Image (cartoon, rainbow, N blue to C red; front, side):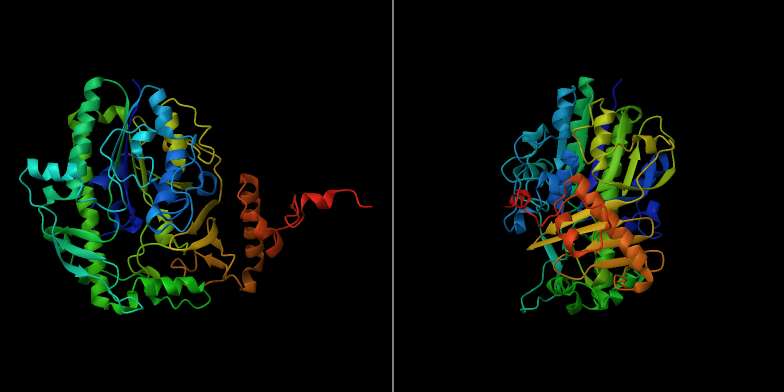
Length: 492
């Protein structure tokens, strides 16, 4: 029997909100159970901390610089809005191998082509947040005589120009069964039941829109956690001294300093409530797989597209700052027959899911050129795995190119139009002190810069051209980026 695949994905999900990742307060029993029966990855990263490019990397197994879908449509300042024609995608390969493929929830991977164009069944739910006016959701409410979406108690700060800030949270006047999260879980269970009846293998993706801000949840979750239990992130002490100025600009955009400490604690408490709501809905899906007799034949993934600041570094949302808060994400995989309760320390990427899915389905993973299967790690094998990892960013409200090299202890961030960053994560896990100009780390800085240059050059990321002339990148330089072909012509 071929393996079914259930892919559970959240949006803007902090890794430290899960019990299995050490949170002692937030109730996440279903995801904790998944981790206890599978493999939890302790250092799992997004290729880029923004929805559309990260989701395109999962779809294709390609890094953002390669697939070129670099920004969300809503704030796009001139980048592509759809994947180039002919781009490889894993659902198309799975369908060719006889799999049914379904996707319930967030797509956000293009504007002209939707999930159906890539081989997924399911309602088209466009946009970056719960589309509460979608006909299928309205039909779901009507069938069950459930009340419509309505909110109060909006939480927001004040922008630099005096306008009301972005909505960060609100109280939802609906019962839990009317929430968009419950709707998506119900539709996923219905699709799983239909797929199971065919006896054929399937891939089912449930992509929840939360806990992305604004955190809009019913009373029971809005008030679930006492704000007094919330410890504010240590990085609220951020001064932005020695950091790229764009970070302080983003802090003003998200109006962090215009809100009280009590409001910040409440926001985090509401975010925690959102995480618990999502865990309960995921639990419904996992229970349905048990009831349908699918658990022993189904590989289950849980991850997110990226993290969320929730006040860390005096920021909200995400943006042009490559901190752990938004780049390190949860990653859990359970494969039938694999060891239970593993915790893997390797540096892995969301993009690695693509080759893993393809291998599980018996498909060729090589077209997912920037992806490496995680199955050997999940099966407990002794694997020679890279000791570092590259992430990238291209901008959101405006172009802002960045590249990051993450090693076991250090993080280097190259910002071509600003200040580069170097963090010692052993001594400074909250990334408050930029050590890039610290001569005590000069050797580390040069070693990381050389390594980042080599990795980018070898994978074809043209970001390396800037590095060739601007930084110490060692002697392994195979081209002169300032030289045009005509300069190689014979001289008279």
